[in-house]
Image (tube, rainbow, N blue to C red; front, side, top):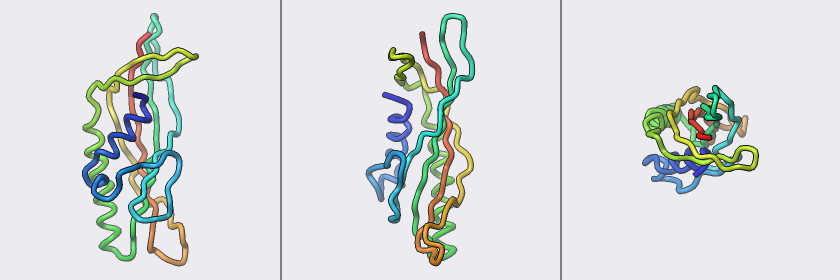
Length: 146
């Protein structure tokens, strides 16, 4: 399983997302309520040992579209984003992942997930607050074996 597949699978498993949505798009969201999109924003080498083992960090942005007609909705939306953040950070427990490097598939382990900046990102229709888009930045730290 790749790091993107793992994070997407974990997001779908979050109970409050699973209640309203059974999929998370990759790289886009629709402008409909309870719509989610996961975008990969990059992978960074943190360190490499003498035999080629690597520690890496992969970053993502989750976009979530919610109804936002009044303050009650916006408070609920913010609370949901916060709950997702806390839940997701508990999902890393040495899961095996696979990554292709220079044409060779390497396996590794997910070490941790950190989540930050859950906030209002966009009001798609500036004349109305019917729907708004939130963002949540996710970083997955993992190791790759030689």
